[in-house]
Length: 161
Image 1 (tube, rainbow, N blue to C red):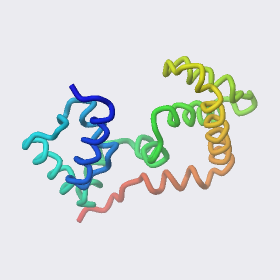
Image 2 (image 1 turned 90 degrees about the vertical axis):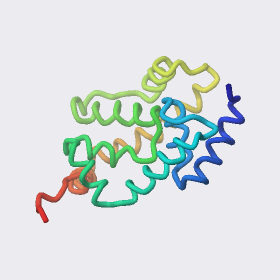
Image 3 (image 1 turned 180 degrees about the horizontal axis):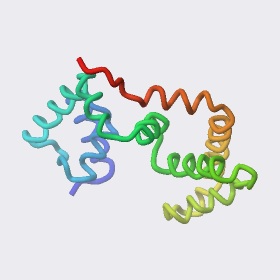
């Protein structure tokens, strides 16, 4: 069994060796797709993941399996974690479904604290994060071009070569 510190060190080493992001390595290890330290079979798998996802045509073909809305949400959510996605989705749904009703930062922060079972000492940090994300969601909701921009990026070309 690895400790948290050795897990981080092992995932950093695996990320360096495989040229894949550390968060991806940690995700794969947490979901038992690979083991840390890496076994020879894990190294082979990571090599092919890296090689395949570097191919733009492969990525396009894989993304065709998702709906336009799913692709849009993937693009919107790049670089966010579960908590940030939860907050952003909460505000975006509110603006889309009932824009007149106010959704308060501390109400959403409280939801996050309960949903993710976070300790009370993180309340202020979560409230600040919620406020920052609320402002982002408000700007996106008020600027339809930004939302359409995501839709245009997320739409695959229908031309067949």
